[in-house]
Image (tube, rainbow over all chains, first blue to last red; front, side, top):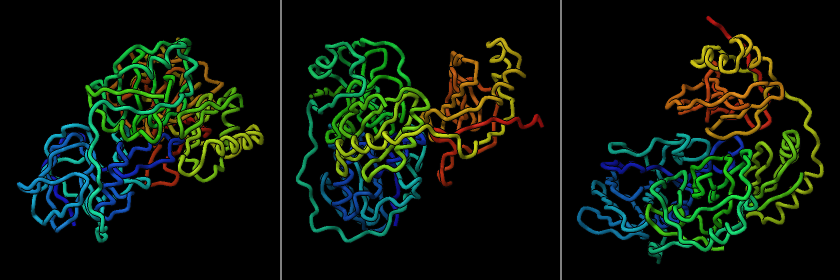
Length: 281
Length: 206
């Protein structure tokens, strides 16, 4: 069984739940930046949540399967068709052998996941099939012309639709205190949580830079590098925070003022340049 | 151990007074309970990351407190990782001139210093090496190279290192090694982990 990629936009990779637990030797967790969407897509085609799927940035994908295969799209709101028939997101669909699944361009959100029953079966690296775009670990990015192996499918589960729609509009995530809050001016926390931020053009799997008011520091002495986590808001001397994502550096020397609540992490993976974001205590 | 700082809802950051305290603490935290995902020693801190669906912050804190109470200075056991170096780096002569020493002196200092991995990062298998016997502080290149070959041995600031694979890099290159620093199919995949002791040995010129 295999999936032939006829077209792919830049930023299409294979992702699963990543390779956590290896930060001490310099390896980022990587994995899907919207893990909830990946998990749902996998479950709707009968896969374990740990199966590998395609993470597609904005859309622009065309694929064909060599056998009848259950597939599911979840994540960013992207129009999709099998031949000329529209396909819903958050729902398992049978992709007949030889038919073409085409994705348009996302209306909102950034990453859409395409799960295939059986999972993308490329060789794992250190226990994961995720591509780490920063370090290059894992499979190569997905480009037109590649043929991806698919594992043996389990029977699809009886529930073939998740009653969900992709959220739109200004996003809000909760933030927790970061370890270096005390290096910032006393009003910095109020500025951080009381302002509306805009996602800058610098947004990828490594991190998302925010535009907005300056977060002033009280202590500008150099901080020795320390361990980092997904969702950490690092503040470089420019005062514009960067939220680290799955492929972000494992250590860094910019002070972390806040960390996005783990439960709200998936929202970060769907932020696109120009989106507004609020950070709530 | 001076303080445990909150780091979001799935991590804690432990501050330590110095290098040796970091090492002792990381050693004491060597047997984490289920749900603790990462223990990451750095220059003055140890990050403990956990999965909040498997263990709560209070349990992690009490584990850290009891483990830290038993932390003892780590005696130098185990073997050094020996890295054979060809001192043929593109920046060798310039770097020596910049530091006001001869090329031979720079090489000698690099080989005689007992190095230790203070922290990792930048790339899988990359270790920031420090040594109390290393007298130099090397400025980074004004314009980083877009590609540095795997095995290149660079200096920057008070650090030495080895590039595990071809990457962009702004450190000054003094040599190269044929040793494979990182191989995902090997156990362990990285030769260098926090605390690993390292020595450089001269190979060639051949």
